[in-house]
Amino acid sequence: MKRTAIIAFVAVLGLFAVLTGCSKNKTEPLSERIAKNWSAQKVEENNVVVYTKGASSNVRPGYSQYSLDLSNPPTVVIKQVDGFTSTGQYELQGDTRLILKNLSPAPTDGPTIEFNIGAVTDNSLEITRTTADRKTGGTTNKYTLSNP
Image 1 (cartoon, rainbow, N blue to C red):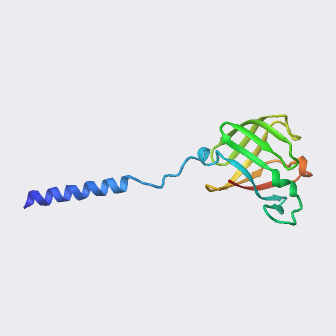
Image 2: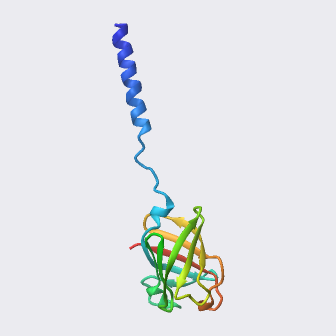
Image 3: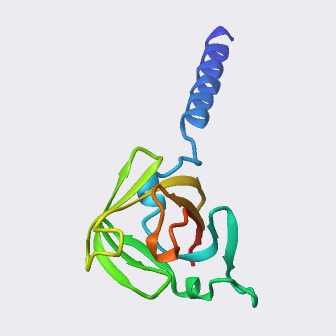
């Protein structure tokens, strides 16, 4: 009887160890979660919403063509509000900063653009430029991007 109880206890303990040790909900690293082609869902310039995807009264309808393609790391292709497209590389600094560098042809503000990273989900990426954007009149822009 003792032997059966010990075997049953060990079996239950083993089953518990297996169930608690195998977590299904592992979060992928940020580098994998952002490796997509993103388009503008909502854009704020100096905290004023100037574009919302699908809206008919956008202040800056050109953001409908804005895209940030991070799907082929470390290559980036950015298409800005005026349709100007640059290709370069991107890198992450921790989970808080996205740096686009060696952009060619160089955008108005130079070959590097940096963003602070906000909320990230499977289908949404929130980024805010760390410097003012000369193309939009010196505004600091916050982008809520979506995929698809």
